[in-house]
Length: 496
Image: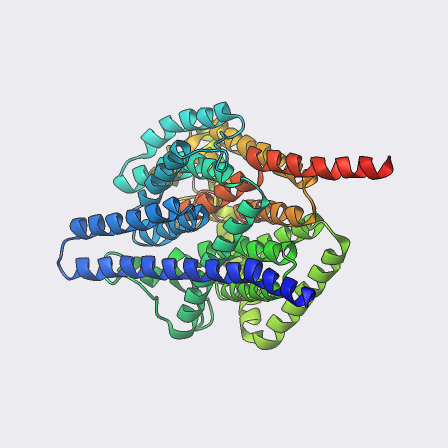
């Protein structure tokens, strides 16, 4: 009788709450995307974009305000990412999510309490130096409204805002878990969106006027076949692939962290959807980065038995993909071995290195237009077409903003990964799974950034910086220190 009551309590308090969160997040996402689509349809019908955008902003603000009042902070920040991907990136408004995230940060500061403490990022002076040193290249490269809204508000200032939000949200392991659960739902919804596009050729919630060109570009045909690479709401399949490459580690980390069998099944389903969506992007760089992240996660998973289990799951997943999707695997190998793809990438990198040697301190300006014009005199023969960026985030920052800005970026990245590593060392096995998953995400995006502009793409950079803020947070460090003290005291008492 007692055991059955305990099982019911575990279900109600753990899995039942998890299902409730998943459903609430999914409903919020669908409503938000439907609202965005409704605004697009009405504006295309002549009702005026400005008024409709204002209406959408008011409704969105009311939803997020309600979530903050109810202290559903993790759902609120996930909706900010949905805004970032759909409204800012796909619809091209650029700065709505940054303003929303900054507003949330201010609200969290004003509503700080013992239960919801406030903290600042470590080495805030480093962040301020990064913001200050990037200002001149941003002004220099802002030759049009797109570049002005793209780089500094999102890649530079937005990085600090999202990182800071992560440090404030990560009060303890439970907070990190809730954030990961919300992100996993978002990734699953976008994976379903990608799979529907792959099956039907239609973009759900797509725009037919202002984004018509971008929508056609989201169907990249593979050379020598009639198959298409799926870009979904990220438009470019490489960006879509990079998103799923990093997001697969969120349900994977939750799978290891939880002890509930129904929750493990749910996370396995989310992982499967994410991997399938990644398959249909045919992104070679994303797959290589995923394998690099898997290597790191297996090392950091925290328990030898889980290392064996993960290796077995990876083997089963690989066998299932090869058995059920042989045509897609063949196309992926064909795309990866295409000589033109490799030649163009190498040519883009060589051109960027020549630009960096000519403008080592200040770059040519943080702007796609600025680089596209300035790089032409330095273009090597291997780069047989003009490119707006070098297809490498590190070369992009160095060529556009200068080597000092790249050095500050890498310093901030490595410095906070170091504190994430220290949190991993202090954590128990479940905590190590979550923090290890976050570190694997950073490694995956960093590896992928060698072949595409992953760290310098606003929606990808925003997600990565927030996750890095979560796993390196000083609040998480204090929480781990508090939970480890009773364990040490109990060991002393037993030994005495």
